[in-house]
Image 1 (cartoon, rainbow, N blue to C red):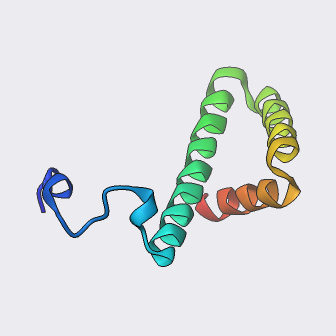
Image 2: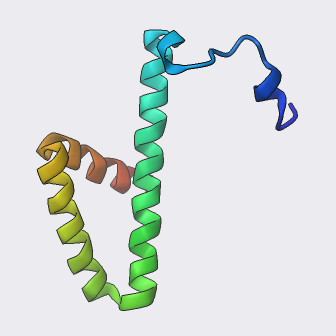
Length: 86
């Protein structure tokens, strides 16, 4: 499959409104997993740049901010996904 096939494949929906409920769930799952990977990469970069102690303090603050904005269940889910991904 070429990289540009997704542009010409007519079977794929053109926007989120046309996705089936199953496709939406799969997309959401993918997005949450990718977010966990991104946070892991950010944390590892902080460890390289600042050291483990400062990176842990940074992550604690970020986690609290996520918990405030999204709620404790979403923050716990993100942490669980990060632990599973590592």
